[in-house]
Image 1 (tube, rainbow, N blue to C red):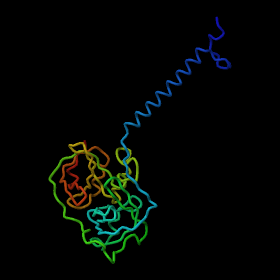
Image 2 (cartoon, helix red, strand yellow):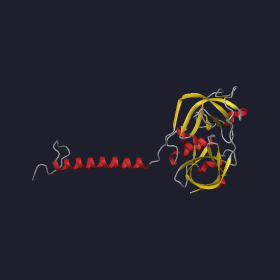
Image 3 (cartoon, rainbow, N blue to C red):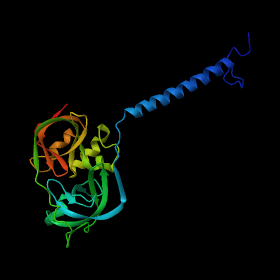
Image 4 (spheres, rainbow, N blue to C red):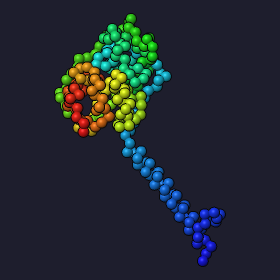
Length: 250
């Protein structure tokens, strides 16, 4: 009988057969673990290309409104009249802080959160984040009329706009449910993320008879739902206008 036929734990000389087995098993486990990790990562939802440089604070000129949510109509994004939603630096909207300046030409101070054509400005803390513009530079920055596009029934997910635009990753799904609920509860605009018949992703700002949604929306946030409501076009924004009663959990 060979002296290598038995494995002795305290021995310095591991049998060749055992060495081959342990090396093969170790390499196999490493390869399987790497493949499993890659597969799990591949199946995750893509976080998106949203960006937010909080240190890049600048001034933005345009027309501001507090309804249905706080937003500004400005040409400072790319030279064309576009709409940017407004938020504070944290998880809150700023509609209540616009006050008598709603509908007027203003200058606001904040940093840009942007994902594709969607934009939000996180205004700085303090009382000097907004002031009336003494010399408006453009007369075509008033908010356009809302165009109804008809009643639709769509399937997708309700999420908060700030995180989805680029403030946080991941910004959708069950892992983001509590964060999205807190953001919407605090006044940030909710949106409906939907895949249309051409398999294109669309983001629609949600309203209820032209106003911001109430907290009754919260139980449906981050869950797969079906919504029957009226699609609307408001300048460069798509709106989905309808009550909570039109939402059905899938």
